[in-house]
Image (cartoon, rainbow, N blue to C red; front, side, top):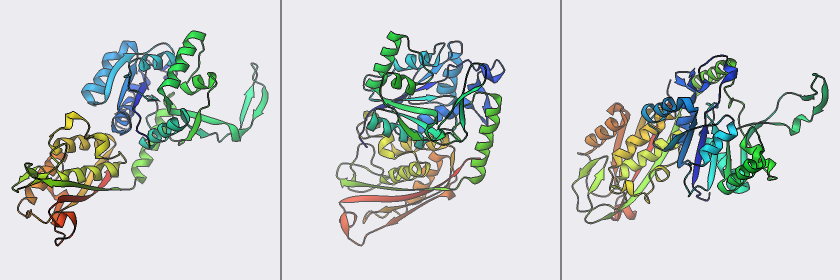
Length: 394
């Protein structure tokens, strides 16, 4: 997959007129969270989203800011901006706040709380290949077109009709061109894919799920809660595997599990090169389906220069927590010919457990040699393997 900078706009400035009350539908409770919270967390845990803008009702900017920044502590949020009277105006307001390096734009409705992290990956990949893509599902019912008096004019071919969803993704230049053209021509549409279509460009349909409903009426809250409850009852455990290796060099501290181990060499790396913690991070992210260590904490980012890997582990814990997972256990092994680690393992386990906020009994660290074989056996490097078991948090 080509690495193109992807930024997102989450739209939440609707009037909620069909909810039958004065409360914004995004602020309705849904299985212990607010509807909006699901979209906020989705943007944060996706390893493909580098940053995002939240579009809020003009009279609720402070509320949306509090939820995103103070309550959910969204690290990738760029700005909360006021929306317009139409969805199209709101997306345009968000687009203008994206950075110049944006190559791919993802647009998502805050009223779709059940979108998945894999949906983001699918539409982004399709947009990279085709320029424009939308999540969608085939219709199940027969669709009829009616006249103004309520009589059937024609029956549409069901096999060609799809229900459009979000997220949708586009190359930056294409969506910008579409909006500039629409603003000039006065074209009005109900979603961004339609805008690109009106420009004469094709949009790729990406298969979504029927569970990705939009909260529009009070009945939708009931349906969404039923879907979430079903997921809680049927959710299978998730297992992730992690691996990391670092070259051993002089003039570096050897840090393992946050413990400085006395040795004449240390791991070479951008951070503190804690190979054990890095393997555990990869295992946790893998089990959550949230990418890997390099995506979230790249060695090209100066913020992570010489940083303690326990800090990165804490951020990883936030990612998997926001994704709705709890840690069942972690098992890891450090592979090195020297030094002997047995006396340091209990403190490593304590550091890892306290960082993740779980009991020490859930962490197991082992140390193995390779009997002098390979780069670990020859003292050229040090490696670690880890597995993590996660469960959906009830």
